[in-house]
Length: 124
Image (cartoon, rainbow, N blue to C red):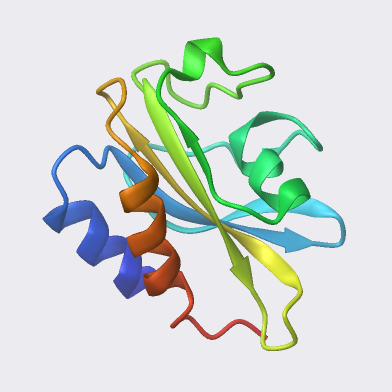
């Protein structure tokens, strides 16, 4: 996970914060990441990451200020994408979360390509 973060964060234009939030005992806790200091635990059922967890689908947000319940870990974040991460049994184990300082930095093509990358990650 740490290597995926580093490659995406440093090779993709506009990736301001790149990291994983992992489910642990019902909490969504920060895992490996690149970028400014992150929120450590995300409030349950609130924000983009929990939307991806609860729906089991990738969530693309063009303008985080318009997303109901958005969790602002850093006010410089303007758009966000969250990709569910599944364990070896097909159960959701967390999300890959990427923020950008630019509005509308992510689209459905980004979601598809990040889903391919995330599918290669081994999570117990």
